[in-house]
Length: 315
Image (cartoon, rainbow, N blue to C red):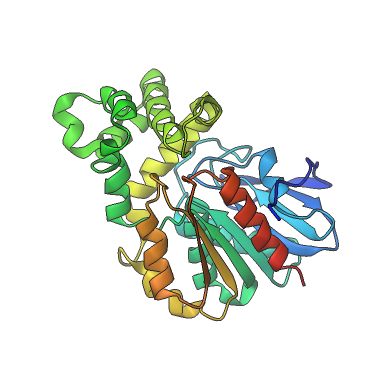
């Protein structure tokens, strides 16, 4: 049996939660109000959630909680970098759990969402009943270097030309730094131009076969600005890790948590090695490579694997 997305649904509850002096989060609940709680963590950081993200869970069974992380989506202020770190987001997740009076929940995250899920679970293992992780990103320097400086351009040489064209040749030895400088400048036009170049490049490489829908989603002004600003902010600060390999080093804290690791074999945004490194450090988690898939959450093979995983966590 091959699984497809569940039918479209609307939230039965949505609200805003103030989590700091300046940040207010958009949060929604869908599905069964008395069902098993599951938390969806979106990617980026800074990408925001989408309606389609509700559809990876059986709405008759699950109480589906989705929120936009600081500065992303419908949370405010938009694209704000102040008080916006990995550990702020980890703290926000616990605030949401306590606000909703949930004792434990299944945590579901892909790409940056997998990073945040691991950071959260390793900090609050007592709050997590299980994890579904997709498109593993550990936010190590080698991973950021591969996609934004040297590596992925060997595969996507045509898209790479557009990515580097936004940066003068004498600054291209440090693409992350050059983009960060422009994305944090006082020039609104320069910020948006850099954001769209950064985000379009990412959208162009998400799928095994690039398509205009993925590119168009990332090229939207609202999404592009929060995505590009937040990603460069996080990456230039090494996600505020204690060490570059912190998430692997701290796996011992979550070995007892039932988990599934799903990764596309031909993922060019977050290479397969990321998932393999996590699998070797954490053999207790079920590891499922998807042979015909790239990075995107809506690749057919990825959808099937993710929904099989959420179905397996029932009861």
